[in-house]
Amino acid sequence: MSVDKPWGGRFTAENDQLAEQFGASINFDQQMAYEDMQGSLAHVQMLAHTKILSTEDAAKISQGLKNLMQQLKDNKLTFDVEYEDIHMNLEMLLTKQIGPVAGKLHTARSRNDQVATDLHLYLKNRLPLIQKALHQLQQTIVAKAADNVTTLMPGYTHLQHAQPISYAHYLLAYYQMFKRDAERFDFSQQHINLSPLGAAALAGTTFPIDRDYSAKLLGFSEIYANSLDAVSDRDFVLEFLSNAAILMMHLSRFCEEIVLWCSYEFNYINLSDAYSTGSSIMPQKKNPDMAELIRGKSGRVYGHLLGLLTTLKGLPLAYNKDLQEDKEGAFDTVKTILPSLNVFNGMLATLTLNKANMSHATEHDFSNATELADYLAAKGLPFREAHRLVGELVLQGIKENRSLQDFSLDELQQQSPLIQNDVYQALKPEIAVERRNSAGGTGFEQIKKQLAVAKTELEQTTNF
Image (cartoon, rainbow, N blue to C red; front, side, top):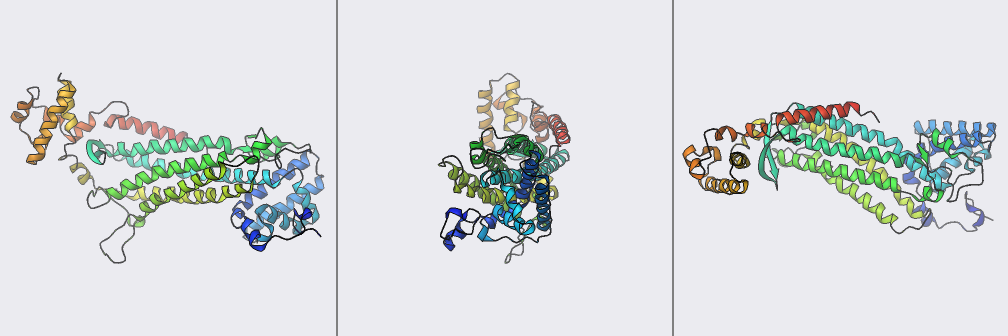
């Protein structure tokens, strides 16, 4: 007697119970239940369109699938590990509903192209949610930047005060990062929008199917040109995970600075209570836990990317059971980056600035030293000589606890007679920022140009 499994005809012994549980994927791939039925509906319509199935059989199968979709929506479907995966579970449930005709649904199809189609559809259905959340974050950044064009803060290199900049300029740097993230997700749609359906196990099928027809029904832009590639390719998942990892890196960098800026040592920003927590023992504490959690979750997404790369690196063509490991990381990444984006957006939108502290930090920190060097270079002194001269003044100021603007004109002129009374205007942080009007610079007019471009870009983004 053969084993009572959909594939059990050539087997005479049941699986070991532990092996069956170990090999089953239903505990996680049930998250693709909707996509599996979505793909099956398109497949049965194609079978009817090509007259491989009768209109009556196709209609009965289609109605059964639609009934199952409604039961899924109503949370009334129960899955069984005995049937291994979402594909076999749904086939068994369909068979219970409409009888043996359900078995015709698998004509000209394999679980190999079926699971690949499901995963394409899973990412295709969720990518717009991610793109929308990313777009909303970009809008928040632009709105906050527009309100803070003339808000000053220290610009840092090596986490040392470097030059004064506009807070809007700082925010717009992150806008550009997230713009590139959005572009990467846009590009990845090209490979997510390929249809593997109809590739069957690996070699195609003898039935006169119409792969383009089913691809069109599912909203795919085109089909895989090679059936072997169709069932073994997971580049589209790797691209998604890579894009997600880069996005999380950007969020993590932003969170790191939020954690710094809201500390007592910096005190540049205040986080809303809605995005902070307290301490169970220290009454004064207000912790930036949401920023820390997002920063921490970046490693989780990195792990999923590395895990799939490692899984794929030694796989021969075409399908191998190892590919079962492609899903949990993708599912978890979606569940990680969506709330990360949404929580971060709320945290950024509701934080407030301590503008006086930010501005004060630019006034007694020697971040205007470059302004004095540029001032001298503009008057004809070689920049390298100007750099040395200003460095000596900075050293003297550090020893005497004085800023550059605290030196008298006589003292400054002892260093160089090129220095005139207008130097004090040049040394003001707001003037230093305002004058940096090279393309892409922190000058206020440049920031307004960046904002205008960003607003136009966001208005034109409607592809999700």
